[in-house]
Image 1: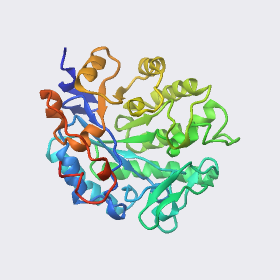
Image 2: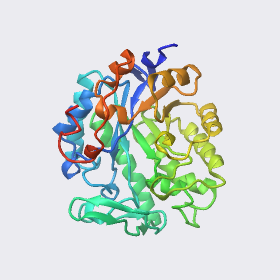
Image 3: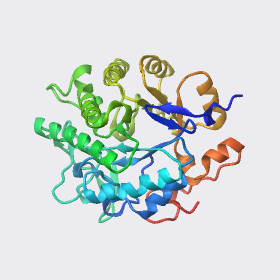
Length: 355
């Protein structure tokens, strides 16, 4: 078996030391929504990855739907992230920030003063979410975004992209997956608009494309990737009959913008619906940038899929939580430490920087 996983590759103008990507993982350690010393340590510990993609980071006060997630819109956040990127770069790593606007997946108790829960359509997300002030709370119905709201949100992504470069990031990943704002426009279960932002495939991809276009204009296409989740069912999304056509149209539009990578979410290893191998193959064949695979990989399967040219890089999520030295362990075939699920989203270093 080859060990292509551990060989260098390029991503835009970057040289990556291996093809291992640390997946974006929400860890809820950003007290006051500002990155801190603890987060710097956590990411620096994992800088052996070819590329780190940070946890979801909101481009807007409106997008801070979860407790203690970081943002990328204030000077304090830019300074906080600068510590993180300096730490990762000092350890020889490369790092992209994932821009995640939570849209309807939020609660006012988690938002700063003056912010509001917004979405393409006024449909509440199913279920409940944690708030530090009141414990578990039901998702409220969001405000339906007006044309002005949509224009403002697109501008927020562009500004956050600029802030990311100021903060020392090597690039950004637009979170177009898992039922957050970009995906809420893509998905018929969350988008019931009848204007130019909903209905047809062309209309549903418009927000994703315009956000990508604005981010590319702000910082250059070689520093912008996007994560997508076809067949996703997270946060009340659901596949529809035109979904495959829609994702292929989206990929076509992202090609025209020259995005540096597409990152496909496949949570079937965790019990989610399988992403059709045919659709993955079509996206792979049609997309001109790099293709990041994800979904319950180990070194053997990662090497096999890279050898078969199913992708260019492989993302590892949960194993990185409890194995800061994951790259070394994968290389040596060492048994991995199991994560402590009870500490995934709790404040403090326990289950975060102490593995």
